[in-house]
Amino acid sequence: MRRNRTICPFNQRACIDCVLYRGRHQCNAPVSHINDAEVLNEIQAMLTPKTSLKETGSNIKILYVNIEDCISKEVQLAELQDLDWDNNFFVRKIDGIHIHSWETLLGVLKYKEETEGKDFVEFIEAPGFMLYGGG
Image (cartoon, rainbow, N blue to C red; front, side):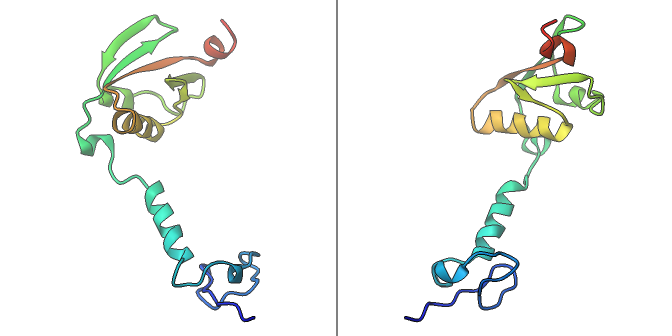
């Protein structure tokens, strides 16, 4: 019985057991049903951020808590950009999520606002030994 030929999503030629994929695209559905290249492009589009919090006009409130200095205050998003993000001595968290860069902070805030519907988050900053060492 002859199999339906499919198009390899990597080299755009008739699919055989190729070195690029080492899969068996011929066993997949015919091209008319599934186009792997389109699926990969859709996944890539979902993973790339389209807008930042500044562009969407975020109004999420941020409570900044510095455990080392015993400071707790409400801050604007722009104030957190001035933190020393290259200093790995400090650990920063929002709801248990480790925030290691400015981009991660924006992504977490956007997720909290859009997906979870939160309008308030607690941003905790402390030296690593205070959070992880039990000090």
